[in-house]
Length: 119
Picture (cartoon, rainbow, N blue to C red):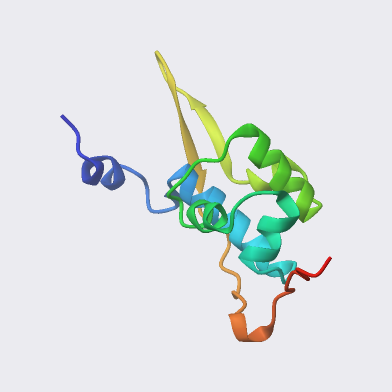
């Protein structure tokens, strides 16, 4: 029986877990738009904790949520899934994700758009 440590060890260095890649894509795009997790959550109509769980690879979004996030970020769903692909095997296939290129990440001190709750 394989443990989670066994499955992680089998992933080549240049690849990562698909949920982790999705989360990384979401984080990078959100930061590039200078949106806080709270601002994105409000625009997409989801709870802020969901954004955090997606960005850390701890939760997989529903199709509707994926579409809401893409719409709120004004990007295609394909952009959120960049680097994630299906690889066909002899009897079944598997999802694999390549590591994104290293880019500088924004620090919260650099400013994110906040949501105006008065509206």
